[in-house]
Image (tube, rainbow, N blue to C red; front, top):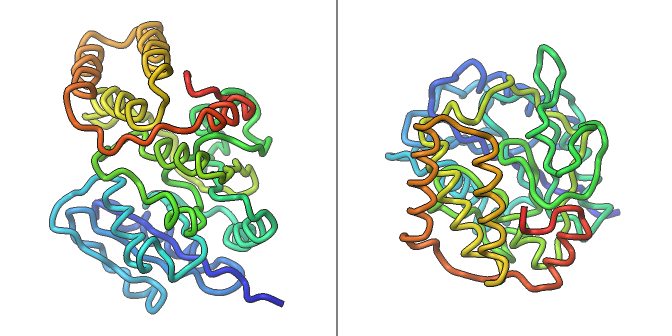
Length: 297
């Protein structure tokens, strides 16, 4: 029999939620099977004292905030180039909590059973109500969060990635800082032939929040949407994709200040470097379409 797949976890923190962080680490420590090795990255801040979870928790403190993808990439590198010291890396928000003790085991089983599976997106549920917000179901048909399925993207703070994917297509795009970095990695993984699953039985408890709570939300969502298209889509689809999102943004009737920030970010996305351009193959466009989300929406 082959040895079970090794699981690690990356958690980034701003150091401002010490109790939530310890609760998360405790839920990781209680996972069934071999211990999950954890790297906690202080993203421009000291890491709260987590020595009680030694020896399976290491910490890295960065002198500046590198953003969500930058911080997670540092966590990946702590497991060796592309995370090669483990087979699977879970990425978990520091104010989340693994609701069950079998999540790591389910990850091992899922990846071992399906050699094409590259990424698993967990279900996020409010710890008090059990409700999963519609935006946390990474597909267009999101009415039933209890239905697992193949999907085309994943949730950044509640997922597991086969490290072979990172070795093959690279990590998260540092320059994004916040927003859409998961879809950038997802599209590259799908273009390389990997698949992504949404699993309702792998649950991260997380308080219900609105993404717009972040001051930079509207600007970075718009900027990174443009970068995402410029980096990854065949040229004919770039204006279609961005035109659809412009229309959707206007239909949502954001406030005047939010719309001003959004258009500022949209302009920035066109006038600044988006990083390397590697347009996906047309067969990947067809694969995304068959999975229910053509890359124009």
